[in-house]
Image 1 (cartoon, rainbow, N blue to C red):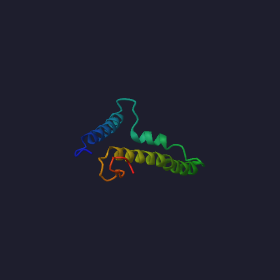
Image 2 (spheres, rainbow, N blue to C red; image 1 turned 90 degrees about the vertical axis):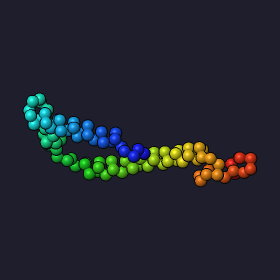
Image 3 (tube, rainbow, N blue to C red; image 1 turned 180 degrees about the horizontal axis):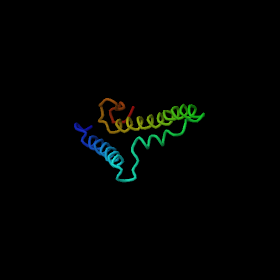
Image 4 (spheres, rainbow, N blue to C red; image 1 turned 45 degrees about the vertical axis):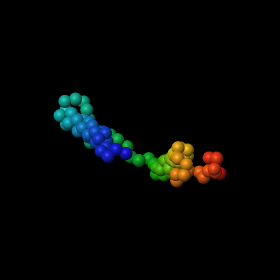
Length: 103
């Protein structure tokens, strides 16, 4: 991991700069760009339907259900790769006999 995450700071500066530029253009009414409050008003115009709670619960349960097997597989692969590249005698390395064969 880098000691100074300059790229992360740069991404945040660009993101906030784009948001402020959008809002500035919208408030100046120089272009047909809507303000952020106009955008949120359009999004929130429609009330929540009757199946929203069921969909929210199902979606929330689906996310860990899909992410857990992927996380487990990647963790297993990372450990396997680290074990295969470890020097004999290092922690995580399988014990070996005198000829270097795994026991």
